[in-house]
Length: 489
Image (cartoon, rainbow, N blue to C red; front, side, top):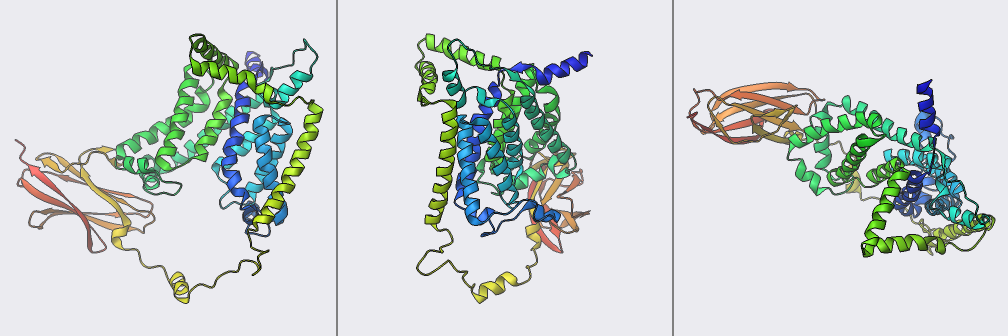
């Protein structure tokens, strides 16, 4: 019985939807960063006039999501951009969020090659849960208009059941647990190989900081295990107290790290917007109290913030809620038709040019032959990413790179391969200064393995001096690393 009451309070206790209101303001603005550039290519991406790639085709259901013609795709994208703006402003909030959710999901499902991504799935769920909530009851145009229209002395309800916010919080936790389970079945994640390959490329955007960190495999191994622990614990510890502070701050740090190290931008921004659902009314009260104390002490920035907050309601025109709905419908129609006309004037396919629509240009025969010829065999040296020597391992990664050893030490040589590669037999040989082979070790490296590790004892029979560790594969030398052997004294 006690457990049932606790669960009821957890989902249905009434609260002021501060966190959801903040998420409603910020999340649509983040999505505008990708939807506005896509508007110029709506006819190409989302219509039968272009090259739409519906996700449902992969499952044998080509007509699950109707593919609109070019004009309709432009109208839908225009209306989506408008409703994202009105959702953020809180104008006809629930209707705006419902329209934005439907159109955003619809258009994403029409372009599974580029538009449908992990962040778009998370954002779709976020918009859907916001549309079920009362996030427009505060900090919105709707709330200002209703407050003006209410009789003097009437107090409008500000507290509502917490279940939409709880569902958004649970969604984030489940996303992280799912990600953790996926990583647990990926050995390359724990060795740091997966992250390292990502960091040294510009798959998303430039990430020079990631390229620098890729030289420190120990950092990647430690961060991999910390990430797994954080993702598993998030759902169970993020609700209150220090657990909430640690999990949310850790999440913000993690997603900021994906921006700096991996070149991701929209995905971390979307996740941080969902984090706003963890903000409660008492957090806002603490912030207000802090700003008020600063203002009383003569802080100009705090005073400006308070003055700006008081002036925001004055920016809303003096109209009734019913008039606001009619104006919203009129603005939507005007915006959609204006968007269609603007796209028509831009003429992306060149159909209104004097010389006619753009035509496909025939490729040069030499270029065609180059593109159609069989892929050249990958050079043996191109299968290797790095080769290092040291003496300490962390997990599967060599973490300290050395070029000086003493008698009694164990030298560890490790080569990292570039995926994909075939099953390989890789030699690691010890050569002296005159390039004579002193010791040879070889091992089979299966196609799913990205590392080969070799251990050599620096015995007393080896004379102090200069030596080389040499990697050979396919009957040829790939690379070598020199090192110096010192006397044990």
